[in-house]
Length: 300
Image (cartoon, rainbow, N blue to C red; front, side, top):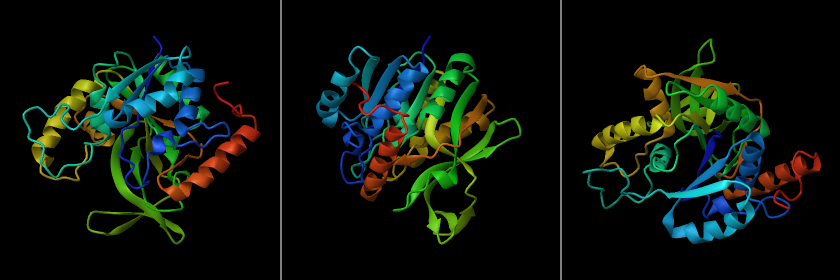
């Protein structure tokens, strides 16, 4: 069975200021998502599932359906505020989605096979898709998940802070813990993260981090649903609280349900956290095309 790629594209793009999921960066108008899908198809993924918001579904489909028709199976899932909240009452001041792990949960009825999860606005590189496809086809089990581990220093934006899942890795390349750090940035010649109280803590440039490129067995859906209920019990009144994928991965390990393999890569990440990142993304893609790693028109 071919694995599925789940693309998280429902974010509100609050820092970026526009619908960055469909902004054109490649030489023939390609989005960053186009490059991820191209790499995924080449690596052997057989289905693409987009997590989007219903209010921009028509615009989104108009861009991607003509490109992908006849190349790969495509499905769409909406991440809406009331999905899987059960008997909880959503506060009136809650305006943002519940987070990346909630987005995965929203795909529960669309995926029945091992699958990978990526962000829509991150460029991951061919090597990561090849390694993930091999894992999903050969090693993924109800008690064995995976995450691609990037070197922190190769994932920093020059234009502001970023969020990263900071990984602790054991001797057998198993993830032992993951902590979501929501404010990582360069401070002089150091990389630091800030905690909730504003305290600064240094991080090595070689620290393995998650860029939200995960490999899961469908068993993750029930775990996510159970954990989301627990999350709402504790955080329903906090309008800024988010249910992140690392919460699920960390609890999967902590509760003894299985192991998460870290798939290392030395690839350099790039993405569009901020508008100022856009020229660098365009230049990086142009360079990859010039080197022959991608055609100048992905879907020609």
